[in-house]
Length: 353
Ligand code: SF4
Image 1: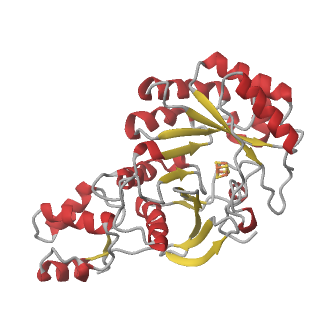
Image 2: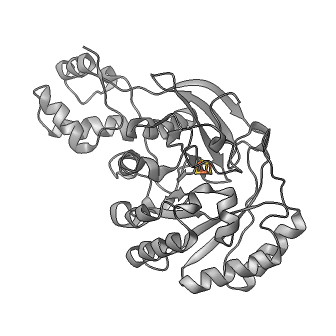
Image 3: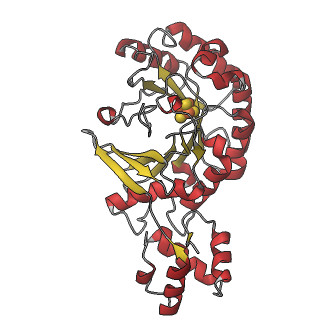
């Protein structure tokens, strides 16, 4: 009989597994802490469990990490892993360090069905959803690499944030993604605050309110264009969920979370496509119409082999940012990270082209 993997089980499921091997449910809490607070993968080292129990656990269960196929470190210290799961499927995970903190960019699917024209991942067909365990394990691989176990306090941790912006559309794998984020934010384990987790979606409008009602994490929308005509050209999903539906869903998110929980609109600056001042004015009018607590993240485009777009000039990006800021919106220009190792936004890919 094959052993059951424990990473990715909810607390309740872990409790049931423990009961199934004839143990008291409170043991599940101790086990949870070993797995997610201490990062332990070896049952034999779980010193506050009896020898018998440790043996029984090792007989029935495993706690494993995905295989690290390759690992690359960028000049700017951005760190990228190509990870392989037990069925041979591969994804990429990235750690982006800042001076005193850092974010792990997590993937949710092998490939992606959304097919955004500017995205390297989108040129790789969807193979399958990741399980909750495979999503959680990506974060644990990063913690292993930096030795950040047991879970440090919020103030001292370097791996402090999670952005669900890697390969895949998270709301196309909603159940597993939500389950994984609940495990990652659980206070008895990894304990990343929900305020430090951002889920980024291409705009699966009917599911956007659930990011507030079922999860309570921050929301980012990949907008990238000020109107439906342009957006549909680069994001085919816009034909299914046009901008109006997405922004109405964003209003519902903020009805639950409050206006102060700003929604980030990601805007990739594509040369001569969406980077004119007229585009900026149209974007501002759109935001005013929906009265959203919004901020923008202007992203310099990172070209990848075979893509059709070019990055906007620096001058244009700055002019665009100034217009948005003059209208009262924060609009920082994101500094491209990890470009030399294809780890920047929209560049992730796990299969050969
Ligand atoms: S940008 Fe996101 S949603 Fe669009 S194809 Fe890439 S991974 Fe999928």
